[in-house]
Image 1 (spheres, one colour):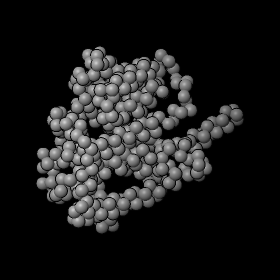
Image 2: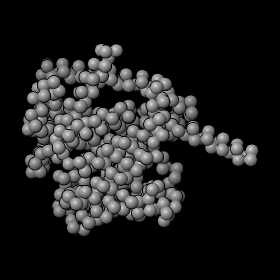
Image 3: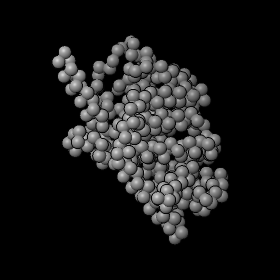
Length: 369
């Protein structure tokens, strides 16, 4: 047991160590140097780190440790304790969308006040009609925060996002998590703890698809992570190498490999894997907890701006408490497996059975009355 705990500690430390190196480079490198690096030709020399036999040995040990961590997590999830933990966490699922809504509203407000769009590296004055857009971002943030004309606010946000793409190009895919949440708000609005609830009443459209709103947010969030990892860390590795060198990360010998290029490669691979796991819903809660840990660690160590990370916290907290829908976890783990046939299971929340049973009991009681 003691040996197992040591393995788990090493695996989590691996995620944490490379995650510190995976700070959003745009937040810790000067504006000019960052965009110079982004506009440089693609390079795959991050993988040159594996040419070293010592680096390759380190990588193999880390991969084995991570595999052990995932295996242990898998069996814990399938145990009765794991099932009870999942059921307990899912009791708070109704609060999940509010985490995302509040954080995206505050993020828009603070970005407008900071003369930025989505992140400090995206200067709002580079956008056409920048004064109008800046004011609109502020208004959108307030509207989403209080839930007033939410669909209109989301539509305006999507339009501004598309305008931003015409200026900043594909780099804006790094912020697809914003687009995903705006799309959800456009489709389903906000009818709980909102002014819209009292103006329009309950949602009457797309009600069948409303249970998939977390899937939309999750997929766009995962795509944003994968895109950022590949285009910035793996294809423009000099940016992350400069972060490692400027912050002297390799001086922490107990935490980082001595080769900055291996740290860069590890950061890119870890972020890519986390994004893929989130997209497909594999080991969802473990993955989200690890990502939250490294986001917080990165904020503390690099002293980055907090507001660009608010939405990451909101989405992560939402994913933690939501029942899995359209996930590999939903197929693999034993709880609720008998509720539906295997081919229907990925498309329905875990608590469908509980709801249907509850509804049946209420029907029986009303008939009896």
